[in-house]
Image 1 (cartoon, rainbow, N blue to C red):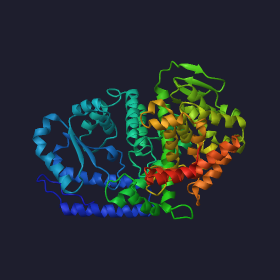
Image 2 (image 1 turned 60 degrees about the horizontal axis):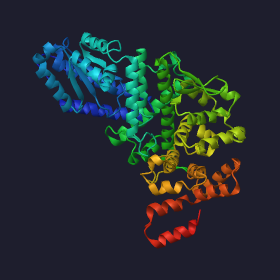
Image 3 (image 1 turned 120 degrees about the vertical axis):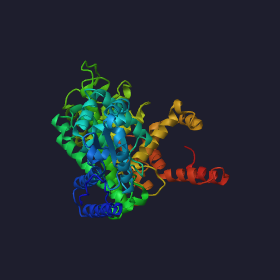
Length: 565
C-alpha cells in the first residue's frame, strides 16, 4: 500500500483513492482464492491489509497521541481471521486525562474510517472500563482475550491484558462454565441441530463459534489460543487435532466463497448460494446425486465431526476442572459412573466385549442420574467402531440390546441422537450411515435425512408421553392402544433410509426395513407391518398435509387403502 503522508497538518489521503485500492485488493484476494491459495494465508492477508490501512490513517490523524492511546483489533480481526466482508472490530484504549484534549482527533478518525467504507465496530474505553465491563460480561472478556495491538501505546495495551487476565477476573473454571452455557443457549436458537437445510456457518452447531469456543477456553486455561496446546497436554490426540484443523479450514473456505458470492457478510448457506458453491468446490451432478447434494453432505458431515470433537474437548476440560474427590458408582464389570458420567472400567472393554458398544447407551437409559459419557470412553467408542461388523450385527445379544433400547420407556430419542453423534447408529445400520448429512433439495423437508428421521422418532415418542398430552391429546389416546410401539419407531427409523439411491425410496426402504426386522427375529406379521408402513408413508403424509381431510371422499379413499390396523 502507498504510505500516506504523515505531518501535523492532518493532510488526509484521498477517500476515492483508498476505496479504489481496497476494491483492487478484494478483487486480487478473490483471484488468489480461486487459484487455490491456502485459505489461512488469505485471511491473514486481508488482516494485514487492514492493519496497514488503519496504521496509515492513525498516523495521519492521531500521530502525536500514540503514547496516550492504543488502537486494538478485537474479534475475528484480532485473531487475524478476516473474510472478505467480515466485521472490523476495533477498541481504542485511552488514558482518561487525555480524552478531552484529543476528542476531536478521535471523532475525525472514526468518521474517516466510515467515509472510506470500513464501517468498523468501534469502542473507546479506559483500562478500568475494560476491566469493569469484562467482569460483568462474558462476551466482553472474550473479545479482550483475542485482542491484538495494531498501533499506539504498548504499555496501555499490556496493562489492559494483565488486568483482564484469569489471575484477576474470570478464572478458568468460571469462564469455562459460562462459555458452555453460552454455547448451549446458542445451539437452542438453531433447534439444537446443525442440520437445517440453510445452516449458519458461523453460529450454528458445529460451526465457527464451536471451534472458537474451544480456542477461548484453551486460552483461558493454558494461556495460549493455539489449538496445538490441546495435543501437547493430551486433551486431543493427533488424529483428532488433524480432523479439527481440517474441518476449520473447510469452513473457512466455505465462508470465504459465500462472502464472495453474496458480496456481503453472509454466513447462512441459503439455497440461493448452494448450487454455485457446489460448482465452485468442484462437485458435479451424478446419476443419483445432484452436485449441491454432494457438497452439502460434505458440509454436514464436517460439522457433525466438529460437533463431536467440541463435545469431547469440553468434556475433557470439565473433567480437568472437576473436584478431584471422585464419586464412583460401579454398574457392572464393564461400566461405572464417575461424577455423573459413565465410563468403561478398562480401555479394552469394547475389544473384549464388543456388544458393550450398544450396551453403554442402554445403561444410560436405565440410570437417569447419568448425565453424559466421560471423554476417554467417547474416544474409545470412536476408536472401536470397526468392531461393529457383520458378525456383530448378527449377534443375538447385540440385537437384543438394540431392541431393549428401542423398547425402553425413557430416553429413546436422546440415545439415538447420541448413537448417531458417536457413529454407532450408522455402524449398526449401514444403510442409515448413507443418509447421514444427506440433504433433500426439495424445500419440503427442513433438515437432512438423518436429522429429519430422528426428529420423526422424537415426535412419535411424544405421542406416548403424558407430559406432552396437551399437544395432541387424540394421538396420545390412540398411542396407548398400540401393542408394540417399537414397530412404529422402527418404521420411522427406516421410512427415508433409501433416499439418494435412485428409484422409489419408499419401496426400497420397505425391503431394508423387512430385512432388519427379520434379522432381529420379529414374526412375519410384524415384519410385513413395518415394511407396509414404510412403503405407504408418502400416502399418509400427502393425505395429511396436501389434501382436504374434511372431504368425506378423501377420507373414504384413504381408509379404503389403509384398512384396519
